[in-house]
Amino acid sequence: MTTRGYSVLTANNGNDAINLAKSEHPDLIILDIVIPDVGGAEIAEILKENLGTKNIPIIFLTGLLSKKEEEQLAALEKAKQEKEAHGEIETQHPGYLGAQDTFYVGTLKGIGRIYQQTFIDTYCKVGFAKLYDRKSALTAADLLNDRVLPFYEEHDIPLLRILTDRGTEYCGKHEHHEYELYLAVEDIDHSRTKTKSPQTNGICERFHKTILDEFYGIAFRKKIYNILDELQVVLDTWTKEYNEERVHSGKYCFGKTPMQTFLDSMPLVKEKILNENLQAEEACLSG
Figure 1 (cartoon, one colour):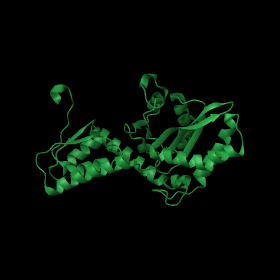
Figure 2 (cartoon, rainbow, N blue to C red):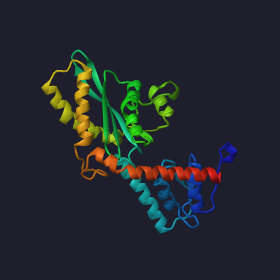
Figure 3 (cartoon, rainbow, N blue to C red):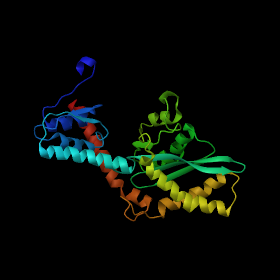
Figure 4 (cartoon, rainbow, N blue to C red):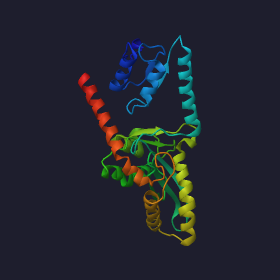
């Protein structure tokens, strides 16, 4: 690989490989299954649980497998396939991963087409929604700038990455695309759903179903809205109740509201951030 211009780092045992991956954050990891002290499958599990290395692709190259190692490798592959099939999202704490999507509300007389930009924190399920008369990269970035990032900044935690579909409002050439530029400026990683697999952003789809049944279906029966700002005011009221009063029974919430889950998870966030900072400092010192 060095003959083709790649920079290659090597480790002689499993522990060295783990420490090297955490300190250097390579673009690709190539592992043998049979490694002294820590097996390749176990190394992969450890790296996939670490915030700084979990998204690094891993390739296994080996000519010899024990039965246990074959089972470990098969289990890893099966778990990956099941998560992809069910659209499961890996998240570790508030701010770790947000999901963003565009929801077509409908056409209102005097206004035209109405689109909702939606953002959901995948850990605590705190949600944000803002209405626009168009679907564009600029409106997608505006939701983050106007509602989402100020929320995280108020609580002194970073937003690390965002998951979107591959719509034109989210994806494009970085130098000419307002949304991609905004993420780059704010140092937010951008993950995209798999091609032909929109269900992998199902957390937004579930929110859209809820808001359609519990808000829009009721609001449009009660009143005719001719001004977008009027509809936004009542949407903000509903969203506040969703975040602060509506309990969730799903993973991480355990019968609490999204906002309570967010606040209760603050120690976890601080611990994760502290650990990552310490790892970065150790990497700088060792380098």
